[in-house]
Length: 398
Image (cartoon, rainbow, N blue to C red):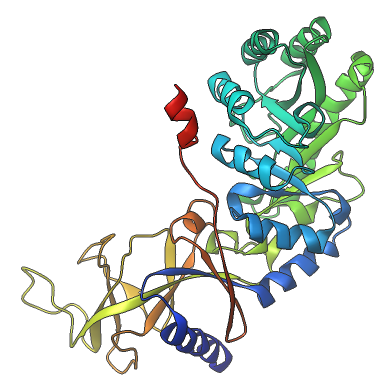
């Protein structure tokens, strides 16, 4: 407990000295390094793919790539894709969800022309034969050959191909249009596995998901091996399950992102060795004695005081100072959120509260540059990806 208190006291002192007076998102490089080293010790470490939406900063991604020695990315958002193909022209990119063909067209018409080879380095994800046929039309329109990977439903039931018959239809379509399509691989997400409801059922759920994946892969290799121009990318896993994959997994490509900064939603047994590495720090604007609620004559929280912070209503849980709590009675605010603290808490105006994000995607985009620290030292400020609908210059050309 003392070490935890000292940890946040050092961060608070640093922010009071060099902070902007605004809410900041802090990345602790010592803890990030610990988590990367944990990842490097896994059996499948050499085939890891970093999920960009969970770590949405080119400098942060570059730091991780340097530690891992590879540049494999999973991308979910067109604006991110445009920026990342420019920032990492050597990267191997798999799209993590199917996106509308209109957005795909934007990529081909708006992207910066550089060394990035979209045919060999980019896999578009497809979840249905109807979408695949749309991509055929796009490829013909743009006179391109496009690489596609097929989304498989291995138990999560969030879309994707759920049976061999539908998979066969899609593979037949690819075979019939090999002049404009290339099958680059498959993707099956298993984030449902840690949520298996019965005691002891998590590992059974993992085995079933991997068996489903293996069955799909066997079907494809048996009847459609002629489509394998190169080794297929067989992608799956994710932060919740990456430690559950080993020699018996059918995968050769493993996604991970959030685990490296370990938001609160990733406090899972499979990730117990990892350390939280991301914090929201927000200045205290006001402190008052007691807890005063409009229209409530009797105070509900004796022995507690009130603080209001700069901003609020983030996807995050209170972490420091000890005893920091949200006030459900008062309600939340994105402008000045109310918290309560023990009356004996030493937190004062211009000190900082620390909240732990429940997820990293979206949250890391809300504070401008990431504040990069090691110990009690500010090392740098790393910009995050722009989240615009599409580039401004493209809008001007419409």
